[in-house]
Length: 164
Image 1 (cartoon, rainbow, N blue to C red):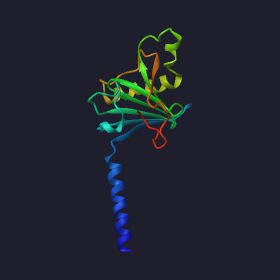
Image 2: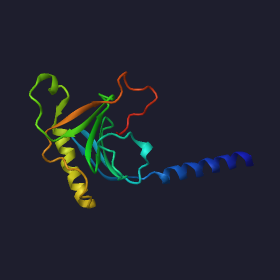
Image 3: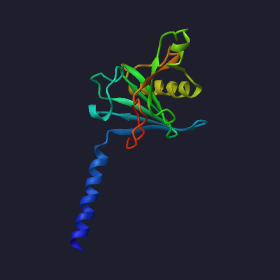
Image 4: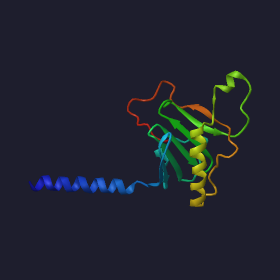
């Protein structure tokens, strides 16, 4: 019996240690017509928590993560904004600020900003202002998301759908 209680106590302490080491804090939660939107701040990220791309390759170890109804994630970094959807698990959408090319082949790689995108990103600008994170990229002036494929042969079975 003593051995069982020791194991339970050890399990509790390990769980507590892991949960306290997570540097993710809920800032805001609201219900919208698109579902529940949750805004998180993640600080002191380790480089192996997310894949480095052109957008999140900076030395800054902070980001804002926005989760919409467990189906869409937005990640805000100091040098860019990513979007990921459960519907297209193998794609990452990076916020694009230029003119969308007129050629038909090039237009496939872009997704115009939706009503959900503008709602979420507008509120994220207010959160960035309240945190005084002036070095983070804002969405103003962006017209679309540029598509980037990250898994060519489909989403891996053991991977969890999470921000990018």
